[in-house]
Length: 235
Image (cartoon, rainbow, N blue to C red; front, side):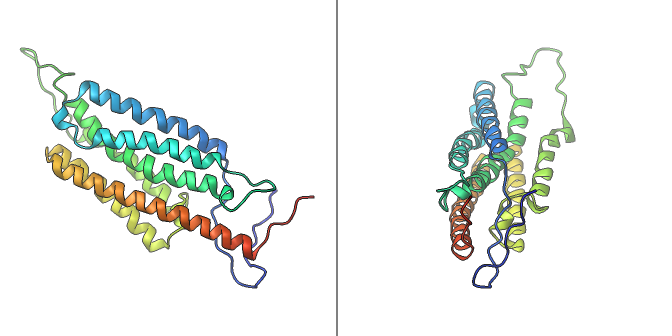
């Protein structure tokens, strides 16, 4: 069994609470999934959707795919062996933060609008004489249900963000994510594509700023931890 991480430094003061150790192999596999899935969906929408109805959906999907590569770069730097510096010790945590906020969040924002566009595409569903246009009704909201377990992931202690910001700020950020995703989807349904782009852009900028702050904060926390609780040399 692994030893409990020290909570008090050599100076007698409390050490920063860092995220727990995580298996970088699992996150590396997620990188592959997050790279291919949004990219495929973006090409599907470009192939089957109507250009005026794209809104910001394709951009969000491509961002999700590209962010997965960046997350993989961070995860690839992870090392806890002799010679590891402060940066290499936080590689997986930084990579998970990128995947959570710049890959998963844009994907969750794009999926409901993607489904709406594919369900109502005139290219996929050509109108023929005698055909009946069946409305999906409330069932069209089913893709949005994926947002709920993501909120639970973030607020129930699974996410990386909770180790970087205070609990009230964590709640505010995630509630903001939920509200912006809903607002973007409603704007897409109402064909207010200008507002959809505004909401999506605000979401992306907020996530990028949060990731930027989070990576620097993790680096600072790890530096303070190592300075006040030097790692023991391996035998």
